[in-house]
Image (cartoon, rainbow, N blue to C red; front, side):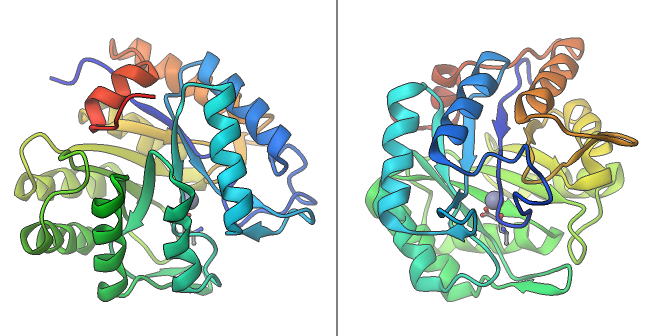
Length: 278
Ligand code: KMH
Ligand code: ZN
């Protein structure tokens, strides 16, 4: 029985524009303010994509280092950098993200259609990411956009060994056009496939767009953890745009408490995920 809930906030993403979504945090000050608000209402991990001075997605190493330092100085959240970036980012830039020294980084387990685009994750690239994270002691969150990505993860762990920290944590990203649907049935199929991974493997789930609530409720009932945020969700309810990331975290924390699985603190999350102390 899972008795607590890990809540990750993904506040920005690489897909929405500030012009379309004025509440999106795009400057470092906005990111840090969002991080503090989300920590206060139940988040323990922050999944970070950065924007440049024009609010365009960037993997600039200097900006990433600055963001890691600022988030560590101002919060006790686990800092997880995205190595997924935007669909246009080259592999070299995505690998270089690790040089910013985050606690965790995402590692997507395969290529997936992504709306009209393709989110490329070649096998050799995934292996390289996994190996560099092992070398640097960065704990991966394996991003799963489709059921077969879990088979790829099993192969990765069998061939190249356990991740840094020794614990396997996956995030099911559900409802991306081109990936698996955001349904209870798909989540249960993934949960069944998790049986082929190490027995203490944990999972969180993210429902994109209108899959947000079905996936959140299915994850809680299936013993999963939660990722929420404006990377994935821009509508709070029909006709109501999301006002802030904290609004989404507070809603997730409320559901978690109702399920008698209250949110964990960042230190409890570190112990769960095998992340070294702050
Ligand atoms: N922005 C997507 C193309 C990740 O952060 O690792 C990829 C993504 C996954 O968001
Ligand atoms: Zn992301």
